[in-house]
Each structure stands twice: as C-alpha cells, then as structure tokens.
Image (cartoon, rainbow, N blue to C red; front, side, top):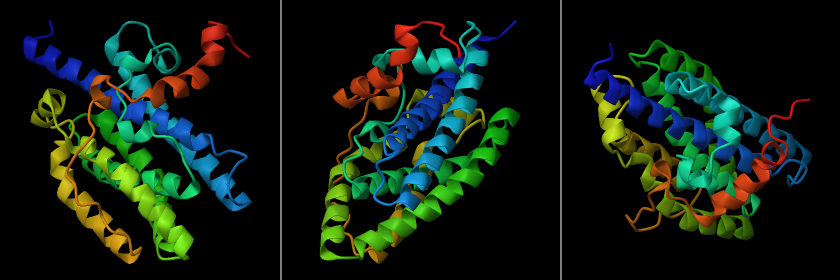
Length: 258
C-alpha cells in the first residue's frame, strides 16, 4: 500500500516531470520553426538538430510521467491531447522566436539553467531521472557552448547585432526568474533527494550568465521583476497559437498513424 507521504511525492514528481518535459517540448517546437528559415545553411541545420535534441528530451520526461500517472497516457497523449492550461512549461520557452538574435538569447538563458539542472539531477536518488539527466546532459553541454559563443559574437559584433542582442536580453530577462521560483512541488522532491531546489541553482546561473554577457558587451537589465505562472498552467497567449499548430494533425485525425 502506498502511504500518504509516498503519494505526495509521486504526485509532485508527476507535476515536476511535466515541467521538464513540457518545457523541452515547447522550446523544441519553437526552435523547429526555424527549419528552412535560418540565416545561413549551417545555422538552419544546427537549429533543426537542437530542436530534435529537445524533443528527444521531452519524450524521455513525458514517457516517465505517463508511466508514473498510470492512466494509460503515453508521451504522444501528453504532448498532443492536452490543452494549454494543462501544460507546465516555463514561460520563457513559449516566447516567439523574433529575430535570430532573440532566439539565440532565449536559448542561452535556458541552456545555462538546463545544464545546471541536469548536472544536479545526475545525483538524483531516482535512478531513472539520473539516467535521463546523464543522457540529456551530453546534448545540453553542446547547446550551451554554441549559444554562449553566438551570444558573445553577436553581442560584441556590429552595432546592429549588438543592438538586437541587447533588445533581446531586455525583452526576455523578466522570464528568467520563473526558473528559480520554487514551490511545494520542488520542496517535496528536494526533501526526497529526487531533484534540487531550483533556487539553489540561481547563484551559479547568474555567475555564468554575467560572465558571458560581460564578454558580449551586453548590459543586464536592472530589474528583479519576474513573470511566473507557466509551471502551474497560467500561460501567455503565445502558447495557444503554438499548440494549435503543433497538435493540429492529432486533433484533426485522432489516433492517426503512418
């Protein structure tokens, strides 16, 4: 028989897995929107590969979530048959691509967090989470190396590229605080040693981000305001439009296979 404490942890873990899986899925879809539209062929291919990596990570998290839930829902059901208010992704992930500079900045800000989270998750008391983290970290390290390099090259590039990168940073900064806003879900998993308190990652995240942005000659906005709500189902208007496109085929032809 599952005790009350076990149920609390399992319920929290299900929510947490959705947060990880939904964020990777939504960001992966966003990045995939560049396919065929990249500024140069090399970047077009790189963005497509990053999108595939993120969607692959989403599959691992969502598959685990479906199994833990025990209601017969698999990764496809969770990806394609939930409405926007059921998604638990970070608001940062659903923000529109904008120009190439904004996409790079969004990716960089997320990549630093993702790498730090995955490194911590390698020490999880849950063997499956530790294994997923170890596998995903290899890809995430590459993503961070690439996005940090691009942020520096574009930020410290031409006056035009610098302007665009600063505008991107200014518009996205207020979405970064949500990554570290811990709640009861995070507290339950941290207590069980399954996942870290995200707030514990913020100092290292800021140190890495500040180092790259300084080299990129970009100025961090002087504001602590943070948009929150994505991880509890309160999203911007952008997610609904994204899901309408991403889920169309499955919604229009339920159960379709090919």
